[in-house]
Image 1 (cartoon, each protein chain N blue to C red):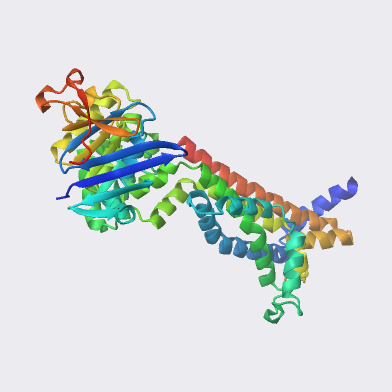
Image 2: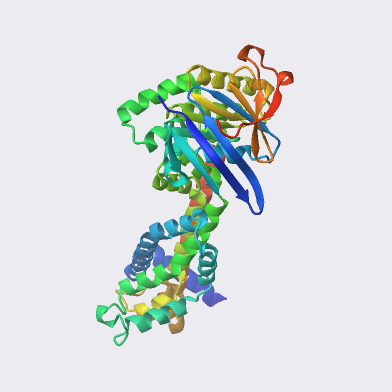
Length: 232
Length: 239
């Protein structure tokens, strides 16, 4: 117990003292995960919209596939990507293995079905009258789509936050395709894994705190935005 | 000036139930038409088809004596009509932005837009509500915003689905007065309603929708319209 207490105090000291090593790892984590979420958000929302409002053959099967992809473990995505990007793999010539780009791609694959499935649920439960109202007032399909998304924005934002929380905390894929290389591909989860295996709990706890604080901040932000809307 | 629109052989099927089987129905410019019928008779479906929001299983539309397939008619219907839901949806923004939506959607220049929106707001007696979030308005105020929002895009045909349903007396009166003003301004209006009596003074034609078919109701002259005078006669197949 004493050991855990001491490690927590040390962790707080590392964070408050702005240890450059810690903040570099945090920076890499945010950079990789933000890139991944920014790249996948527009196509994911479009696909979610088509699945919710489109009327085409195979739509339900596609929804089921996206829901199934939610259960794919990060290590399986990491393994698949590793095989593809390794020197002898079909994409080996791109020389992306053990780079931040590979980590971004891995996290995009992980976040994609989360945003699609959750955004689809949010759009599916939104009032179809929104689409009809926009269309009857002369909106183009694109503008009507943006209107529907704006009206369902809290659900969509929750989908993006959930996906971001998942990818910034995932370890399996980042470890396999990033390689946990210091100053290059070491992010928060891979660093926690490494420090814990070395018995350096303070750094692991400090980084874990960052993840928890991040989750808290995102949820507080989402909650307060909703509260302000409902109280307005 | 918009020409008339004629719908022929409109059929809408849900599952194995034929909801609508309309031989012919004409929307004439400047006319106010009332469609009444029981719950589930297909009034909403018919209005949505007329507005181009819903696709029928079959049917053609004739405009200016040119008969169009549904695919070709749909964009025309969408651009020439505005359909108002029974419970109009208010976008989660100010009353001003709600009224301006149609102008923004059709890319009206900002300089013209503001003036037209203020004019419309005054018309709907909504200027005092301008900055308020439209979602927080009462049922009657919402209906006024919806009518103003529809009027500003100057549709050829205004399709009103139960415009006074679930409203208190005051709101119903206000909504009714706005519809009357729209009618006096020469807008072509199709109203679906249970409350036939309320609209008896403004309608030019009355149809009763039953078992998927439209029946013309004889309403007499405009001065003597009363439900008790109404005589249900089958609507002629080809006019």
